[in-house]
Amino acid sequence: MMVFQSVDPMNGKERVLAALNREPVDRTPVCNPTSVATVELMDLVDAPFPEANQQPELMARLAATGYTELGFDSIMPVFSIIQDSSALGCKIQWEQKDNWPTVKMREPIWEQPDDIQVPPDFLTHRDTRCVLEAIKILKREYGDEVAIIGKTMGPWSLGYHCFGVEPFLLMSLDDPGKTKLCLDRMKEATIQFGIAQVEAGADAITLPDHATGDLVSGEYYHRYLRDLHIEFAERIRIPIILHICGKTEDRMEYIAQTGMAAFHYDSKNDPSESMAIMQNRISLVGNINNPETLFAKGPEVVRQEVNKNMDASVHLVGPECAIPLQTSIENLKEIPLAVKEWHQDHKTN
Image (cartoon, rainbow, N blue to C red; front, side, top):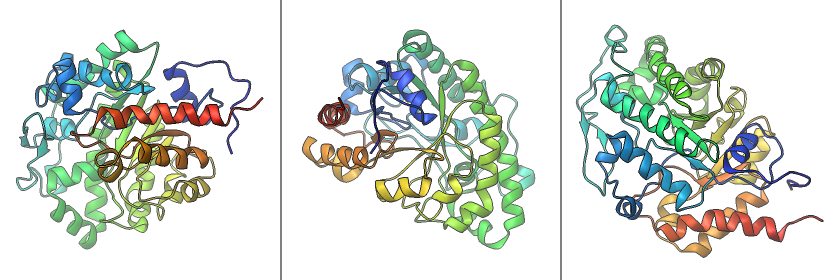
């Protein structure tokens, strides 16, 4: 069990950054590497979708509620997974307040490696600029108190968006060389957007790369993504939180070799087993279940999942992924409350 002795009281920023570096903390941080936006929070601060995905002031206002209303130790303003793809040229279905914007993946923009181009206005496009400006706002208002976390999509995720899921996966089966060339060209968008967020003031970066357990194997991760992720850790010079959904224990050994700061892991993975694989080479963030626990159950079940992560000495605790937009505030507030009470119950003299 992790021991929390002789550590001066920390604020959220100090706590998150220490945990990402596997350094002593005064208590386990409550971290949201992906979105904790809800319809209830949108109404509370008058920052609804889709406008909060398009206007920096609204994006920052809604994101800040993760800290001001829920009590998390981090703020993450990129609610969706479409900002980068929109700036690359993908068509977006923006939806309304109670639904996520999505990429129209049946209308791919690329078919061959030679089609791949990062537009010259990639970082000044409305949807990437919105993120950069929101980070600047949050940095000014909360940057001394709480960790500001950005998000840049990995090339595997961009491949789904820009080529279409089925064509991209078929390419990975039929032509590994072509697939690697595509990934190598798409990685420049990942790096450019990540570095721009560092310059805007982000303290850490979430990097979703959706080589999910239900679509590709651990061997695929090793073949296509491990070396790219090592490169990202070298070129984006702040802590990176890799996010991959699904059951991923078959690739955690490879993920631990990347040099990234942390892995944001899914509730399909057991906390103790996952910690045993990582062997403290990389921090774990997670893994409170979204669709069953946070959305459909009550605070007591949330507390049970928090305690399971705490008992396993998981480094940072939070939802497993972007939460359902109809999730209750009560369930989300239970996460930091349960973490603090766990520490009270396990306080050392």
